[in-house]
Length: 619
Image (cartoon, rainbow, N blue to C red; front, top):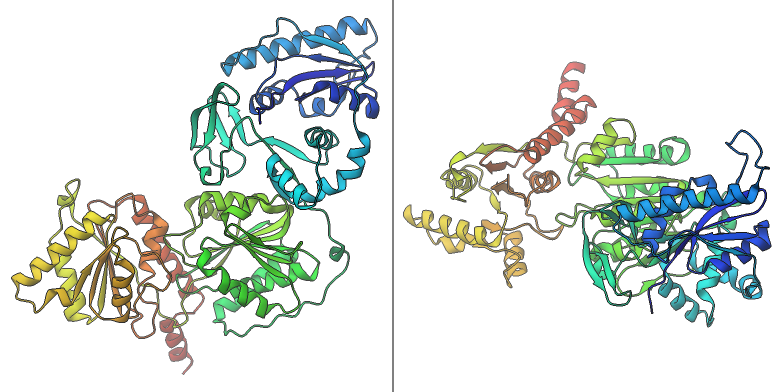
């Protein structure tokens, strides 16, 4: 299908004027004449890709001028003297502005002068518009789609429209549907993807359809090309009948909360019910949170007929979450959207969506929840977070549940823009193990294996009688680290080092087999790149992060790795070491945030040591 080109235009009558863009401006003039009495139009650009036309329009027209502005509004005197001469001077002024903006974008304007037209008879099929507008709006409402996706949905409804582009455009003119370029120009040389939100992964390409230089978003390329010349159509979800009355929602909880979990449960219910802030962060110690803390908030939304969206970073836990939500909310429709097929009935009350399907929603949900479910290294991508924010209704609420708040989110929370609800402690009441930072300056740049590594290994095996997880940034270092430790074991005549140590990484076809054997306790030491599953942890474990200052380990990743230690009540005081050539921001931030959670637990009297002190004082 050829790329659609859009013209920047100005329409007017004797009372007001308006600026817009259209692939067929004569349709606009006919419609605006029919609805608002506009009589004349001038083309003030040659045909342009949608993103270029939209950028130019936003640069030369104020918001009021895009919906219709009276001449005397802002001019001080009525527009009555020589209206034709004055309007032409206005058109020429805007024409010059358009040419200037196009020059800054290195785009050519093939017009030497504006092109003027008066009202002419254009046959618009208003019958089709009225007949199919509910169908089209029903398809798009609460969603954001490409034209081709809308066409597929129409086919599913057994509807074939030859004039689909005109009908979609008329609905945008009426304000029923929003149209945006898939890749938007924010300033000359700067772009952002309107599908996934990336602004740093827009790549240059050549468009063979449009026969010109073009761009595409690399960030969401696996979902198909997102380009400046393609349109996305969106509309907010309509109000549901259920929102007009309060429903009786039963909640079945078969879990036991700790005190801090129960406090979070109640705080989230209050947040949804009456808090003026629109976003909340449930910041939980690794291993201390569970999905159920958000169920109080979900019930509050469902009682008022609202809808809930769960963003799920990991597809493998989708079925588990679906089962638990169905058990917790009997009589409520719960559905999952993941993989190639969205298994959704129409407008379910609760939706669980992977990144791909979350990207399809637009202002559709009253409550959106991102539960990262301790899924390191599959913490939610920027693309999923952007999609979930767009899926929330303007007046809706957003809840982040995480043990690794991103620095930007943490900064917003400190400024009071996000409500913070802490779950600072695990169920056994012992403080979180604080990582010890071991600085080895001589390993900088050369990737030497530090001598301290073996002493930490021996401390774990001989003093603590624990298993050990050594995490490294890449497979090559896993192989070298494993070889180094085997050699040292042989030097001290340690019996059968191959029976106590394994090295693996994401390059290893036997990775899962080795990791499972280590979790079972078949051998003591595992040298590996980042683990991939929630269950890849052993109860009696210490952790060493080697080259912790490597870019492979961000702050959140280091916190999650530290969370592999101390979660079991059989060994709650495990040890974590960050071995590094220097202390960077990620290391500082990880240590600081773990300490902050322990301090908060101490303040609230949740620690076992705090409880013992209270008991001693009371006795």
